[in-house]
Image 1 (cartoon, rainbow, N blue to C red):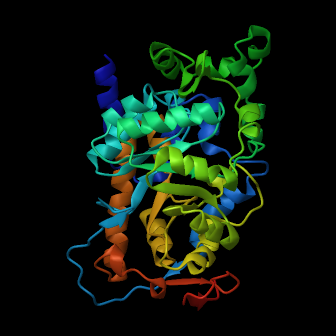
Image 2 (tube, rainbow, N blue to C red):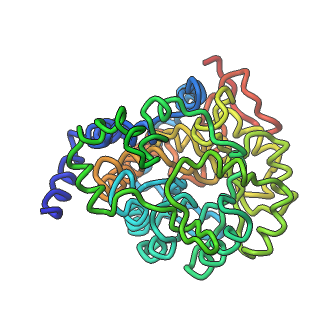
Length: 410
């Protein structure tokens, strides 16, 4: 029965029903309880930065070269010395088992089949060993210091032994962002397990009986399997606000993290040229220009707007990635034109996962790949390696550092 249901969901994601990431978003909204969907979809406070991340791509326009034949487009790139079939990496998304049974494994399996890197969040419901085993492609492990230093060192060693190829250290969570949708939906109360607190909010779960049945069949409320507290076992699933406040990552943590990992380190959460240079000085191998998808500090500039100044600050000495607001292949093209080596996507694939599990993630990747090829052909550019700032116009008031970017009036 479950296999038939999976097949039906996969069929429902094909043309003409699902043509873009927004269609996947709507499909996820139909399947998931409000509290789970808003966890994926929402941002901090008034969600200005969440919206601005997307609007920034609308502000940058493309400059095509016409009368150019491009029968074949090469999407290949390399990140940290590993060849990827397209400049796309799945970003860390916590609590994917709330979205779909064994959600992290489903996402990793699909990404691996496509040769795409999948990044596993510390705050996941699946064991990192199982996620690594599920993927045929490269996997990265994202690190929070939840549970303390000893707990983090143990997770780092497990990740090393399981075959994770890079460690992604997130530096923009000294406290969890004020996510108003989660508060209104009673996320904390629903996680408490206390019936009186849960009652005002629990009905939203029963309005999605198929999701609820799958959630219960997958074991119900999971634990954070990769945050193993000495003497206690995996950390129970709960509101992590307090845990994040007690586990702030600072620059002084980088030396012992480097000693424990001894492999490529990616610093995620860069939003200023000063931090970009500091990350480089601390020995980072790559950095991610990120504002946590608008889920932390509201009112900061969109990541695409910040990207040129960061790229100018570090030059060619370190690889720069970007996340935030990517919904179409043309968005990826614009990020590459402004200096990103590749992009990380979170919501785009999380919508697919919430809609239909691995089949939804596959559809998200398929949509973005087709968008990339079509956009390159329309630009008259045969390869992502040939993209440069001359293919875009940016608003005149954007900071661009020393790199040449074609100015526009849009």
